[in-house]
Image (cartoon, rainbow, N blue to C red):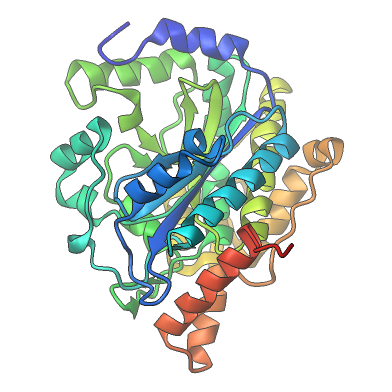
Length: 383
């Protein structure tokens, strides 16, 4: 063990990992249903969750007190993970309603002042705030993370290498955060600009080639005291050393449950297809991080409305083809596992902009999204 990372344990965890187990993490903004403002009520929700069975262990705090995350826990497969998550959603939204609170799911809150937000009181986030200062305070963002079990730590690192290419496409189709500080930013995912372009060790990683390569990277960071624990490595795809998973963390939070479920299905298929391609030694075009950043920026700025770059052919293609390309690539795995993700015709960012274009205010658009989130993630039932 070196400093805060037990490398031998990480290898053992991945040696026991099973391909295709799934864990889901969904982040929500905690808001006042009347004013629609962020409210620092995480501790209240956490306390109230204690009387709701397994919910207490399924929720977690994030950076700010006006944010809450629900975690499915380990699902034996995708269907099991989504079944677990549906139960947690229903319980969390029920607790929020009892507390007179709303839960919203877009990549950013459209007008909340980051200077008014309170950092959550945990050792990890106190360290984040102390180390990163303004960068941490400015990061009032909400996202979707998907963990997929991959057996073997060397194999998991190479799966992450392969997934670097598809991260921009996943971001483009998940974009839900055009608004910040009460205005349209002109971006499709301002969450990504705030988080992945500001935090260190964030965004698209280098290709490490092997566990030895990734381990050397981590050992260097530890030796020079850039990090003291693995959770300070925030890459948009990473092997999770505690869970034995490949974690994909590129997507904005989704305002409807169907969109969140569809992305989780597509990401799961992408991880497993990358693992299969690795096993079958399917060739992959070597692309530098600098070039992949070109697509990453295009996804942030234009979403599916711009053009993306096919680096194998060195030519552009319409960003709107991103879903079809991902579906075509993952078809073998999806066919075997019965995964058929469905997506709306327009992304959440496109729908929000269209509503403003039709005369609604940003506040009215956010109110609509709050209702959609409640209605789709955990609809109220009548006896």
